[in-house]
Image: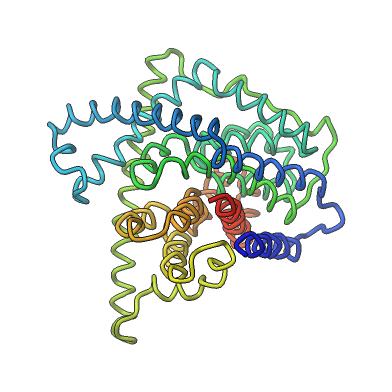
Length: 398
């Protein structure tokens, strides 16, 4: 029964994307089919085979060790405050967000030595070859698994003159449907690591699938080049480390500021709702609104509203707000619901991302920035559908 409901959910997601498509005749059906098969095979392998489980455990252990290294730096600066009571939300900034600094430093160094750019280029090229999608879009999708929305788009700024409106939609959707590797460690401190690790590649393919349906593209070879020569401006490894640390600190502060703003705003909205309709909250309203789709995704009947509330909170605020609330009750939910919600939350698909992406693109090309703003809501819907698709596929194998 759960498999049947999941198939209905997938068909519904793809159907909505088809209705939104601005070029239904040129949808790359073959490429989309291949990516769906990859998602099914990858999820089955990671969740249902001993080798897949070993890989997940191995990668989780690597991240745990990196987090341990990062916490040694936090502990030195803050004198052990972070370790006094790890579950105390008052040290959330120390235990979770400051880990971003170390991860951003590692990414910066790997980029300086051109290790990541070369891996991303060739993995993107492989995806382009097997799916028939353009190289720039494939490269950007893989790049978005490692770098944040702004960084991923800036990495292809030299190719922006090649991007039509449809191509611009696809690269923007990939950026919104992804996460940054620099904050993966922070996610893994809040929700189960195995679901974060599976969500990253699933969301990459889901974003490409939905964006390719909504805004199909077909390009000639001369309009499809990827250049990774000047991806790092650092002159030495020490400059790369310094730049990465500063970027990580900036991200951590931005996330902290957004958490303060969004959680305070959410509390205010709930106060207003409570004054009008006693006992109700925005999260509950969102939960009931999204309950039908969570049912199709495979969430247990008794947990539909709860799951929907976290999903809705993530869309209107951001993933950290939803994760922090989800962490408090995840122990009371079934393993399948935890997996489905965790995968859904692991992406940048929310309202605030529209402004981030539009601002980044405007900084590169003002006219294209206006284009992004004009289809901002369409971008959010597409990225949210991608999150639903990823979470549904994950749920089929839990």
